[in-house]
Length: 449
Image 1 (cartoon, one colour):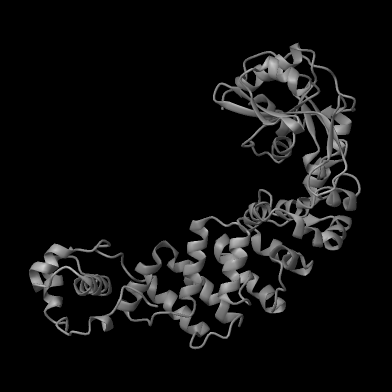
Image 2 (cartoon, one colour):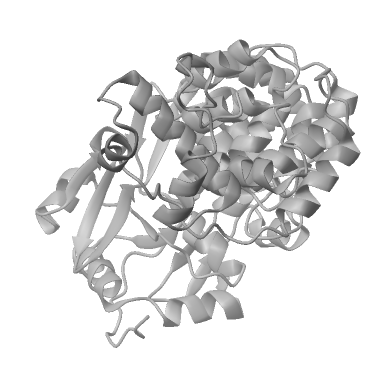
């Protein structure tokens, strides 16, 4: 990151009392790119007030250089578009445009106040403001309600966000009940911030926790895809299991999934063992008390991408279908599950240990033994099938058709199970199996199911 070489122009002063930058925020300001400096100076020279706000300030205070930098200004959108004619009208109704400067994109929003949230998500009316104080008062949490005047090197923190950052507390700006009723998605955002940038779970301030519990029914009115966007971030957190445990205690998961989560005490124990799971596996653990069909229906209602749906379907299809500790079966299992074989085994381990299902024949110690043995396996010598249909037709005199296809599939399975690497080895094995049997529908498939 280049150090900014430009001098800053002073824009309008804010209506707040500021403080000197902290060391980490000062370091962040020193490293701002010249492209941002240019944008800030143009707004200042147009007699505008201009500040960096939101997540960038929060992360800078934590000593983390942010991925995105947002700008707030008292200039109205129409005026900004005359200064930056190539800007993108990202959310013009809410005063937001995206200013392009070099290879950078800076989301820039006019200071505003908001009124009436009849849908518990978006304001019915937006009013442009010249007051930074008013703009910060409408924000969700104290840690997101800070601003930086870059030119004057001043930090504005009217709601003591720095203290909450130090104490790892998520606290609303103003009255929690009001903030949540304005935008019900803030409940999920609050939980998401419990896992912000670290390996230690944060805490909800008590009034906010109460407000979420009392308003969790508002979750049903949120767009399902927005719920998943926030939930996925939660499940991807380094402390996802701890956050989900808090959500479980506050009964918010029932409202997210629009169903009753059963076996909560067992699920709570299972979460302690689930830290190696990715977000998809963890989601299946949470929903494990439900029939597979209902799990898929919930995932579909949340608008999960097709790739995630395919992976979850496969997890459910293979649940309880474990190999023995014999190498051929272990090789086949590993091949069929590909890069997700260990996720599946970790999932099976959690389910069997915590008795989350009544799956017959799956024993906790059995799963441990499988994990131990599968980790000893060497990589396959050949992942792709060695022979093709033409070779097999020549070797067997079988014509094209289902019988040939089934034999080719059987041979691929044998190649995986026995870790074959040459056509000669395949040919030898072909001579030993009963492929002349007319009932080809009974031949082994490339599957455990």
